[in-house]
Image (cartoon, rainbow, N blue to C red; front, side, top):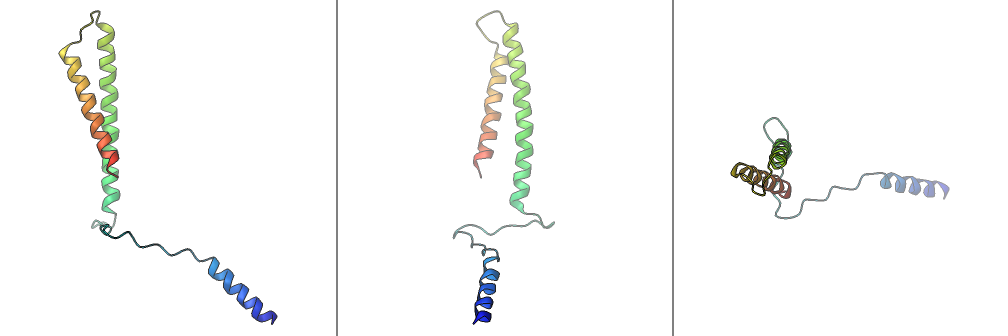
Length: 104
């Protein structure tokens, strides 16, 4: 009787330590695409987009510093067309970063 109890306890503990099975992907999702080098295509795209985001953020920072300097130099209530174009470029870069981040 003790052997049966011991065997059933060990079997139960053995089953409890197994990792849960991986659930199948939801229906309608495309299968994971791998590149010839074995890496995931999605991961490579995300890495490239991350690099673009960092470059765009650096450009935004540079443009924002330039706009701030131009506004400090100006003693009038008007801004130059050059400053407005820089502000438009900041807005365009910001929208590009936001669009890439919302994709996933």
